[in-house]
Amino acid sequence: MLSFETLSKTYTDGTQALSAVTVDVAPGEILALVGGSGCGKTTLLRLIAGLDRPSAGRIILNDETITVPRADVGVIFQEPRLFPWLSVAENVGFGLSHLSAFEREGLVTNALVRVGLAGHDGRWPRELSGGQQQRVAIARALVTRPKLLLMDEPFSALDATTRASLHGHLLALWAESRPTMVMVTHDVEEAVTLADRIVVMQPKPGRIFDEFDNPLARPRDRLSPAFDAAKRDVLRSLDRSLRDEAPHQQKTAETAGMWW
Amino acid sequence: MSALGVETAGAGERGGPSRPRPRRRMLALAGFALPVLLAVLWEIAVKAGLANGRLMPPPSVVGRTLWGLAASGELLTHAIATLWRVAAGFGLGAAAGTLLGAVTGALPVARGLLDPTLQALRAIPSIAWVPLFILWLGIFEASKVALIAVGVFFPVYLGVAAAIQGIDRKIVEVGRVFRLGRLAMVRRVLLPAILPDWITALRSGLGLGFMFVVAAEIMGASEGLGYLLVDGQQLGRPDTIIAAIISFAVLGKLADGLLVALTRPVLAWQDTARDKL
Image 1: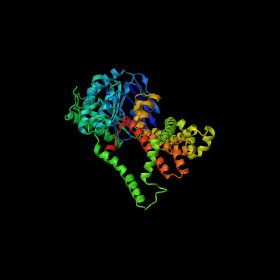
Image 2 (image 1 turned 45 degrees about the vertical axis):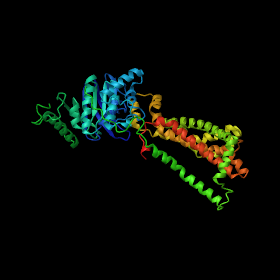
Image 3 (image 1 turned 90 degrees about the vertical axis):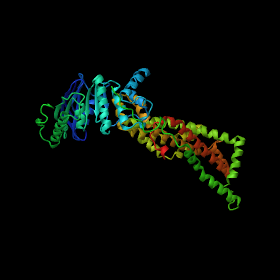
């Protein structure tokens, strides 16, 4: 279980990025954080990753407070952030240095097959496309079998086709070991495609505005009316959050019975 | 699980795209065109009586002198003496520059403590150390090597410190996500990240090493290319001086070429425009 308890973050320049955020995430759940710019989504993710410390409140993962990066927490950033001086295989195996070369090679090869990059082991990152690089980053984060996977807009720089492919890949990989996942995204369609629950955040200071449980069964049909309705409800909530209105989770006739 | 279709990578095999070799060879040869042209023009001017060539001997005279020095073994003796001094000074200066640059670049406390003093020392013209080094270390090899090491130290120190401070924060964060300790972070992330800048700094240091060996050998030596310069001056032999200068240029270029060749394999990962320009 992952819990944020009245989490707040104020930077040294006085900017309050987060204010009293409280959320519980069940084991194996995929939680999406959506919201306008500056609503603290990335700040929240960095706190969970242990890359920054909260000003108040705490983050608890399996009864332990997170204060520094942990071995069982994987992170996929917005950019692939591969080490350019390491080959694809060396990048994927970066977090496996405690294993023997034989074990590492097996895991890396398997991870590369899983993300569709079999045979690319010896290539340099510069020789890969943006989508391929992001797949390497996904493989690197998942090869260590983390219990919690954090993703900060991991597909935002990719074209729609590549993004859709990677969604499928990610879900397939998630289904294997079912890590808890927290993802930040600007893309509501992506949130509805991937997440079990969607949290809408509001800026100045960053706080939770609204929450939606996603009842759509997987695999989700992006062309279905239910998917469309779910998307619209989240978009409506986002609009309200930006206009500083009340969350107001009133169901429309169209979405009633499909989304809630 | 179905795998995505494997996309073909944009570039060629590991190690980069194939280079247009004939064009590169032509460009390399083009570099000789200007000096050869000037040498030929000067030779013609002296032969035609347009210049007497006493203070600036023509290439044929310099060539004869070089050949004579080489045939007698004198040139090799001088070259080895110079190279040994440069190698020793470069080794010491580069090691110290790398170590202190890494420490001050990575540790704010060390930066606050050491950098102001080192920057102040950098402002001292290196030749100003000569009397002190002679007093401290004597007139023989140690003072010469020390002077060269001082010359090499500062570009390497500055290059390494600046490179470490300029490392992309995002890359370091990946290291933190993988919970690298301080030493592992240095070994697995910081040092590889600064490798290209470090090699550039080493090349600058090596160039300065060759500048400082001249000063070191002029200040008192019985062998070395710098000694050959002084000898030519005292004997009124400009051809010997030019022969020594040419030898310096050749040795400096060869040493730099060797450094580039040795380090090229570890920079194969770089995505540079070198092959496209």
